[in-house]
Amino acid sequence: MTRIKLCGLTRPCDIETANTLIPEYIGFVFYKNSRRYVSGSQAKALKKMLHPNIMAVGVFVDEAIETIGALLEEGIIDAVQLHGREDEAYMKRLRKITDKPLIKAFRIDGKEDIVKAEASTADYVLLDSGGGTGASFEWKLLSQMTRPYFLAGGLNAEIVREVVDRWHPYAVDVSSGIEADGYKDADKMREFVKAVRNHAKC
Image 1: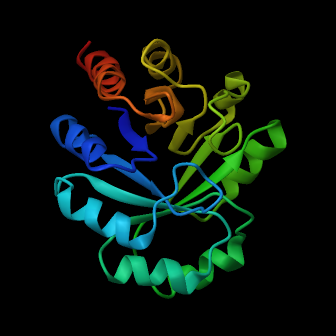
Image 2 (image 1 turned 180 degrees about the horizontal axis):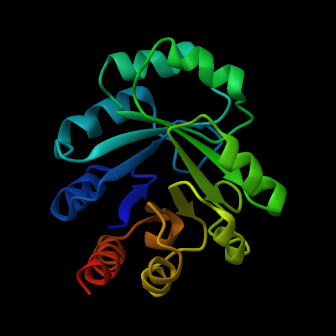
């Protein structure tokens, strides 16, 4: 069954909606240049509201390992998603302070990027067209993937069913596809989850 990650949640009402849907993951963005940025204190308050069956993933871009470690130690996040230039040495250092799942994002522009994702020592890889643009990459490249992956970029309720049916990703990761006027939209969140879950029942 394809899992679901609703990313970039910033408000209590976003958490309330997620709690009614129980996706496997939600994401808090700790990258200050993102319009979906939340501070540690904001994320802490939101995590306290979050249903215990939902994992909170912290999304980072070239962040100091100590900062990530503090958020993990405090229980604000349950997993780490790396969206910058973090290399294998960085992940090795991070693993010295946590055994929580690590997700490494890869921007897919061609076959060589698929090769890099396949070789990553991260627990999971996320394939995207590039951070939060809402655009998709050339999905036919997915046929070369042999390991489980999160798929992001260009997803919404209208197309996710076809994507799941054709590519069977480990998880689908959505942010802009469940937004209206720059904020998460409860109806779009529900429609997205329903599209994925209904497909799983077929």
